[in-house]
Amino acid sequence: MAGIVLTILLPFAVITYTQHYYQVFLFILICMEAILGFLLFNINPAHVFMGDTGSHSLGGLLAGLAFITKTEILFILMGGVVFIETLTVIIQLISMKLRKKRVFLMTPIHHTFELMGWSETKIVKMFWLINFSLSFLSILLLF
Image (cartoon, rainbow, N blue to C red; front, side):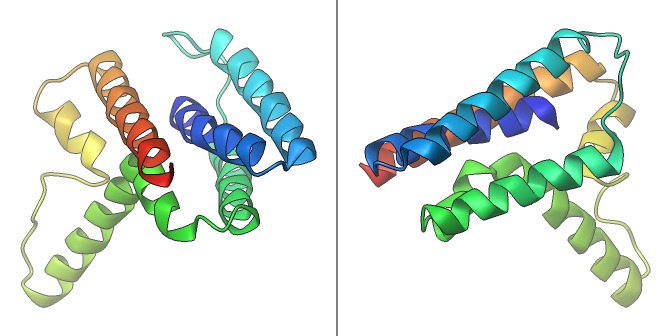
């Protein structure tokens, strides 16, 4: 989660700087540094776990930044991996309620990749790359 948030904070840093929200920009830089410090101690194998409290706090931070910068729609693209992970859970729940059948082996979708034999490191790298690409695309679309 921390690595994905880092890739989402990059376009927010660009947006706040170009919109002259310098105090918010500095806050984003501080958050990015804190996340980098967290990631430093969590290179495989992880030593510190963020948990729900940390991930929900970061999610709230990102949602707040989307409102401050008026990029709520673009935020869906920036946080593509997070939204896809959530969407797979919703699809699975609806399918189980209506059809009594699974669409995915397990949700969120990263668990399906694990069941297919992918290593955790490979999944994390793939998600980071995808989200970084989506974040870069969101910057291009904005400007």
